[in-house]
Image (cartoon, rainbow, N blue to C red):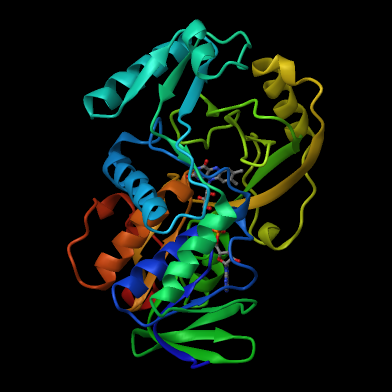
Length: 384
Ligand SMILES: Cc1cc2nc3c(=O)[nH]c(=O)nc-3n(C[C@H](O)[C@H](O)[C@H](O)COP(=O)(O)OP(=O)(O)OC[C@H]3O[C@@H](n4cnc5c(N)ncnc54)[C@H](O)[C@@H]3O)c2cc1C
């Protein structure tokens, strides 16, 4: 395999895979380099709800476009269990109710098809949600995908358009020459490229540090729990009423996979950890399991007989403002697309579009100032 490409994308999570596909479709000569197995980091652990409800109004144009892009990808290639099941956000108090009403009003004014349901109406949409909730918002257009199959679909598209994929190959550092990126250094070889895109999740800080840059990304511990398979019981994505896109402590999301497992995720208070944690296989937090089971049974009391099967931990890449870093970084030809925010799966096609446009010198379709790496002082020594 040639060790030269026009563009090297580091990382084959959902973001790197989407970028690889986009750039290859635009005619670039692309190599995607993944240190392990595609999708095996946080992307494969994702609950992969595709939606824009209660995330961030400033980001709505990007999110809405991304939701459409997933729908189109399903029509064009499919094979990743795209299921437009809709999303409920349950409300547990009068205070949350006021917040939910405010969100719904703003989103409806922006054209989203969302509404507030009384508990009796909730049961028409999600019959087994019989817990004592005050209300729930309903966003009928939201969907779920199978995260591993979605990553695979994007990589297949990239390869169909000529991209190369190298797995089990860790990039150890970046190579810079005369103020421009020149390629990447792996354990046994150097690879040269005119452009390098860092889509490497919480590991991105280390690669940037190899050129003296200090990115404000920290690993954030995220956990999931799965039950044994049961007959169809939870029809929708059921999440807490929370306006941060699923990053605030206490946020819970519950859904049932196509093969019958009930999946849930609760965000814990002390998720931020030090760099290096993402390299280890951590133990699952007992408090997480307890909280998750309590919330599941509070909402779905009839599921009390269901057995837990497994629980696992992965690491998201969190920035101080919970927004991705997307754009040029340091030497000419270096790009970053990392950062997360709880809804990175939804965003992946839009992030890929932005990178494709910026790298090709086109005017970006969305407001890039929200994601500009220079909103933090992470500058390259040469340009500082
Ligand atoms: C429990 C949970 C539930 C979630 N639910 C949702 C949801 O419902 N909807 C939603 O939109 N989002 C959700 N998210 C968030 C979403 O999953 C992430 O934002 C998204 O998967 C991030 O993708 P990524 O490609 O940036 O990161 P990753 O998947 O971490 O990919 C980075 C890749 O880079 C590789 N890499 C790193 N360093 C190197 C190197 N030096 N050399 C080579 N390869 C390297 C890694 O091995 C990895 O494969 C959820 C996340 C979690 C944890």
